[in-house]
Image (cartoon, rainbow, N blue to C red):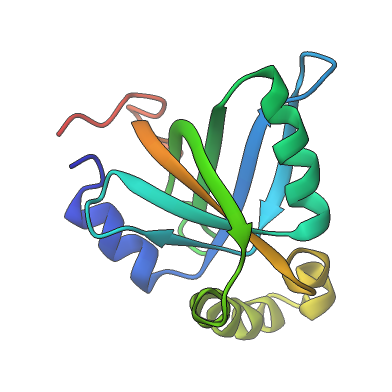
Length: 155
């Protein structure tokens, strides 16, 4: 079990933003805003959701290696975690996946409004059909701005 109960609860309760990344053809990291996250029951796998456009680019980069990174951050507290793992599979997001994504969308839109931003801030990352990408986790790192940031979380 890699994902702690605290991280699982954090992902379920907070107003979050997500980024996925991997190494591009130029040898530099390509980052993609993600529409959501699903933690699997075994807590060793996650599924991330990207619009098809961004997913196609990320999946094309996998020719350079199967490693992926995924960052989840609270836009209110800055609490954040980086998941590192290996690509397992991808498929078109299902209706059930879209329900999971809407949980995050429904949380973030009122918060963005309170911050003086509107839905256009995240619209390109949540609008349209999506690809579900499943990752087998290798490590999780604390990324919250505080002492200890960057350390691997040991279970």
